Amino acid sequence: MVSISYIDHLLHNGPDVRFYELQSVAEVLQRPLVVFRGLKRDGKQNALCYVGKPNRYGENWSAPGHPDMVFMVGVTENWVVFEWGWEKMDAQNDGSCTHPVDAHRRFTKMIWKQS
Image (cartoon, rainbow, N blue to C red):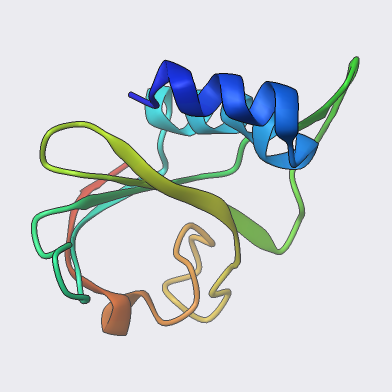
């Protein structure tokens, strides 16, 4: 969940790219490629990170996502979205091209992977 007040703020004050990325947020939360638990930073030890390859969106257009990037959505244990954005993909990971660079250093563990 993203607060209505924050969505309204993005709609009226921008940045526009953050507003349109909300469509990618929804897409990744509905169809993640991988989910990690435990961000290795203060206060986010129980958070989840959903990773996917959504479309990119703008005003009246959409296009395939960046070929060498993944889209990450950070969610608290109370299901509040606190962060999202495009990150460089780790092509060296396991050949699946679903992990962001340095996932093993950034997250405690992978808890789900699309089969």
